Image 1: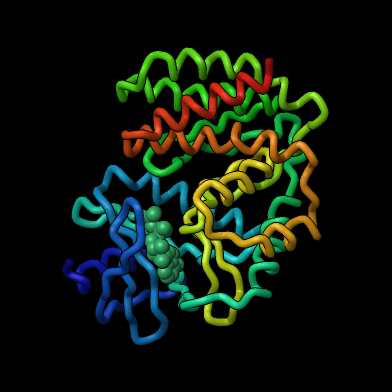
Image 2: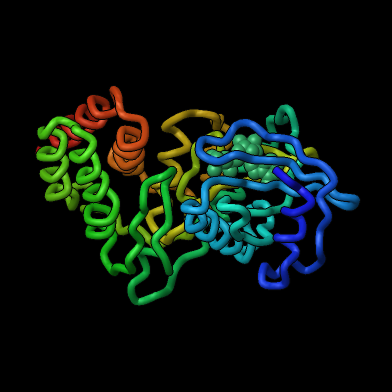
Length: 300
Ligand code: ADP
């Protein structure tokens, strides 16, 4: 990468950077699932840059919008996004660089749970409260966000169904689709005594998308925001691990979870397991089908 030419490109007024930056050197950062990432060094501060082919610009634009929404909520801390653009056929997203701490003290885990609960306290008061102002992405998959009044309808039609349809295109067994569609019919079973509110969600909260800065403050990144049931964020924290019991203690101290959360957890994680099949293939299809069969069994 010609960082000198790249500096000139990102400093174009159209990109809206408040002050021009001059990149002196760059180091690749590992750990991302999808994009290339760099730490950019300037005479002043460091920046974090994501790069990918130009077709990924919508991914970076929607990530920038989500980061801005989270920052505007004044609840959890996430990197400040500065600009997105295209340079030499490459899409890019420039944001604040965070110095992450190598390990976390226990008390900070409570704080991380409390912080997420404060984000979830941001409730949409819209007449059609579930959704987002644009579609975005969960990993590489499109995430549909048309505003809807009814959460059950939203979760069935805009979360589970599109993933089931994608799975068929990826040669998943027909039984996965059929059972999944049956499950969508049965969704009201899990909401007999529970009416979710439309909370501002991180949307992609696995352990790899949260860490602590050097001051011990919890940081959340790589969001795919929308307004939905906060239990979906909590369920995802449990899907791949990385959050300790203290995290949930902190969360519940601020915004206690409904007693029925445990019964809905597999229902909400099914979306991510299906998405994993659609992104990575393999045994995620069997895992998803098992979750669906167990859920259907429960509803009978
Ligand atoms: P991807 O969208 O490709 O999954 P991530 O947003 O997860 O990429 O970022 C990849 C890695 O870069 C993360 O695991 C984290 O360690 C690091 N990272 C993410 N955002 C920042 C940031 N603002 N400052 C410093 N490092 C970051």
